[in-house]
Length: 238
Image 1 (cartoon, rainbow, N blue to C red):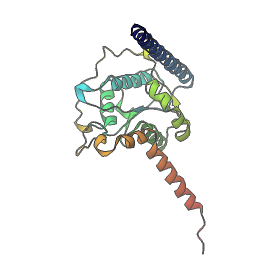
Image 2 (image 1 turned 90 degrees about the vertical axis):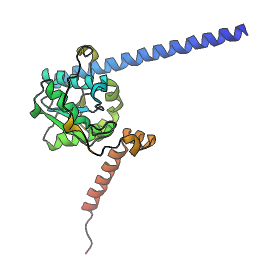
Image 3 (image 1 turned 135 degrees about the vertical axis):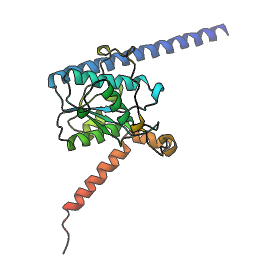
Image 4 (image 1 turned 45 degrees about the vertical axis):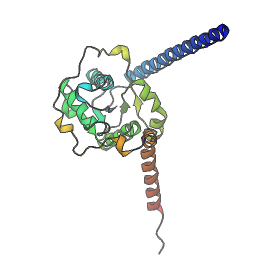
């Protein structure tokens, strides 16, 4: 019995050491990716616009992730990395349209309103990038970058390359921003409130949301557009 307990304890320790090392290596990998991407962007700046994916706005319960993305966007604007910002996101998990709430906060922090835009359709990260990329093109912007945390940025890398060609990455470099003691300003978010709001959790199953995160809606739209363009090229028989 004692030998079994020793074996179990040894296995328990090995597993936790393995997990700790994996987390450390993953963090180092993402940190390296963010710094290299930032250095490349510094050479190519200024960008016409950066895309900032949305995060649910929940007043005093709004997460650190939203704070991080907004302050990173402000840093990139203030330091000349970008001339404009597109915040992206609909009312998904809370009744506030994410992109509008984030734009109001950014405006309060001093980013000029005329240099900010809200993409209000996206409900998943892939849609944040795709719909914002389309908006940027429609606005005449050519040099476009995605500005988000390195984890999301890396997860979206292959999707972005295929469906949003030309979009560069400027992921958050954590040692360049200090946000722990920088609270988000209190805002009047009434203009971001969506009447008749229904949470995506009630509208879609887990697997539907997961498919959306993987880009199902975007892929369907792109496929339908290609089919439509193909049909237009087919000559009509007399």
